[in-house]
Image (cartoon, rainbow, N blue to C red):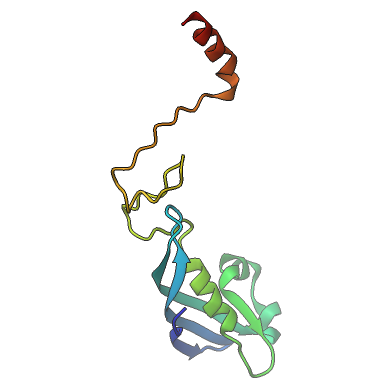
Amino acid sequence: MSPVNVDLELKKTSKGFDLNGEVNTKLMINCSRCLKPFEFDIVSEITAYYINKEFEKELNKTEHLSSLENIIYYKNDSIDLTDRVIEAIILAVPEKPLCKENCKGLCPICGEDLNENPDHSCEKEEVDPRLKDLLKLIEKED
């Protein structure tokens, strides 16, 4: 992982702070097809509303429910942004990361990397275990 660059803008409001910004970093993650590690660029936006805990009861229920995931209550005079930065990085990682869009992955039979050997072919016939008895009958006829 490279250093995490965070560019944030914090605006004071009557009940707290509006936070907007961007997180940039690079992660080493594994390709979901070929399993090789590769560097992945993360660029993610952060948006949150930090509201002082004393104003929690003043918010009407509709306003509170419509943006619940972005509201964070704070006490005292300090706000910790660490969780929001970590969340932005985690959410920016794709569910199935690929080292390249056309990654061919691994051979399902022998596990060879098909990107390194595109002409690879395994000649192994797999018989559905439910049909093995039928195969025995066919072999007896031959």
